[in-house]
Image (cartoon, rainbow, N blue to C red; front, side, top):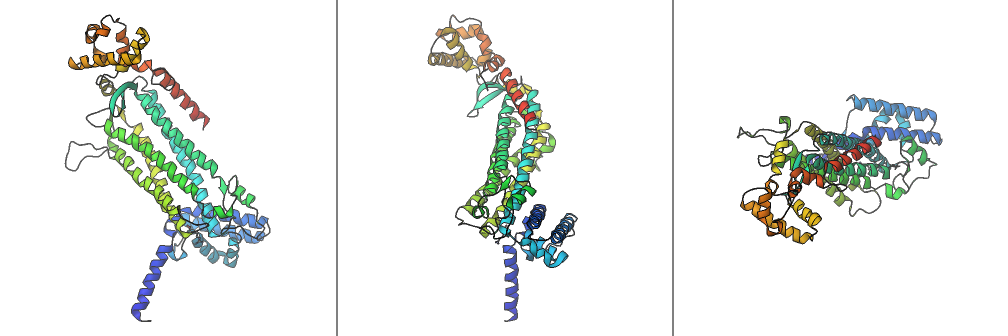
Length: 463
Ligand code: ARG
């Protein structure tokens, strides 16, 4: 071989090593990998597959490796390919041939599935807790704004008056469903893959229940063939994160609009905004914009793994190594997003007056007039609707909001209302309008308090 050919061969080998390796990112799983190995060795010992002495040596070696990694003394070598091989190679250096006994009755296929299962269980918990923190923050803010009027919108047009607490509580319901989704994934996936081996189980007399128990799982997985290439729980995590991100993104969009001059409903604290490098007067809502933007990348990670998985024949294929970076990225992103959102909401200023004044635009108590006519004058809603439309037309003509019309103006607005009683004015009042929607789940202060109480009860029950 010529010198040039030799150089080319070396470069290709290096490139291949890099292409094949996952160590750069799966080293994140070192503690799960070590915990799994310790449990596996204990089980092997209990089943008399290895001796007590060997088990002790293996465990001590693994604990030393853990310490080396945590104190940054561990030498990472990409040639080890992945975290499993890196730890085994170091263990062999530390305790010699006994290290080779650890891989009895397991394969890297069930090993990586176990590492990921443990990691995902842990993250299902930490993300759930962060969601609970957010819900607590929202409920605290809601408590202060039960009588803060704001316009409720549909099609981004003023629709009916609601209160700000009620608006916040809609997001609380979304985050509560998110919480349930993470918990449900955790419960469904509380199964231990270890002992499934490469794809079909093992001829060694192992005790998978024991391993599962040692690692804190409910039970072992049922089918080794399914287990070795199952990435459903990673996909569930990516989907659950995408759903939560979508909720955060919708809220961010509202915060961006609300902090604009047009709305002026909220003022985002200075730390969560930046100025423009050219326009000195500007305050840009960068943080909610980024929260909204990061949703795109989180969706991308979900779609990527769905596509990776879609045509994989049973059982393990190396393609599944591609699950990790996206999962890690989405988890890091959502954890950061939830913390930042929580803090931003804690520091936000609510401009009650601007919200209230916005209610005086757009005739948002019009439905109340129609409802009043139905209730008091026993006319069909469609007729009441048309009468109210005439009133709105009149109010627009004299440049007033329907909620500000006097009784004389009301009487003049439609022939149907010439004998209307003063009492009608009460139903046009914005606050009365909000409070009149007292059906379960409605916006009245009464129902809003009810919702807050239900959520507070849920928060204490899920502690
Ligand atoms: N690094 C691999 C992964 O993440 C571990 C499993 C490798 N198994 C194998 N038979 N090549 O998927």
